[in-house]
Image 1: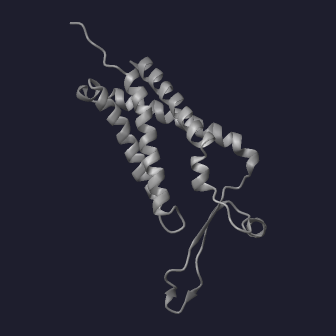
Image 2: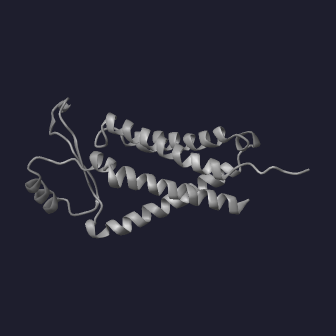
Image 3: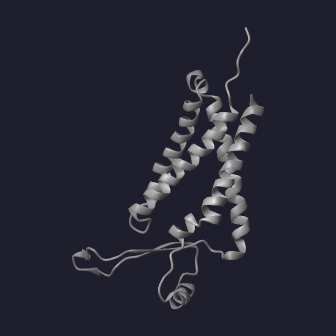
Amino acid sequence: MMKRVIVAGILGWVVLAAWTFVVNGIFGFRQSIDMKQLAGERPIYEMLKNNVTEPGRYICNPPMTDTGFVLNEPVYSIQYAGFGHESAGQESLLHMLFALLATLLAAWMLSTSADRILRSYGRRVLFFAAIGLFLALAGEMGKYGIGGYSLSDAVILSVHAIVQWTIVGLVVAWSMKPVVRQG
């Protein structure tokens, strides 16, 4: 049984990696959301480089008045991880490792599900779609708000997470066919 879980998890990870490569690497999905360009970016970059020296997430609020913040004024979020492009490969490897662990964990969770779920291909796929839905609501939609993503970007990222995990589920569910017991 554990061998089936590992094989299914690895197959799911391969599909997840391929999906990520195509959607992000070829079509630039995440880049279009996370790396929008600024007009006059160079002076802004230099100002940030000189003033944001410690890793963290910074929020720039409008100036306060005697009655509080002025309504309808923008709030900006700046995030600095503490490293630059030289670490991109290490970061990608870490993401790949987390993705492998996630698909192995999801395959194991599926293997411990009720027989009613395990007997049906559709229910096994829905199991993974539910994981995508959970990640979308708890993860991507949780990034919406002041200093975070716009509502439209959070919804797009959420739909992406649901589709991504459903596609992984198609492969894992196919790989984890129920065992017919002779008896």
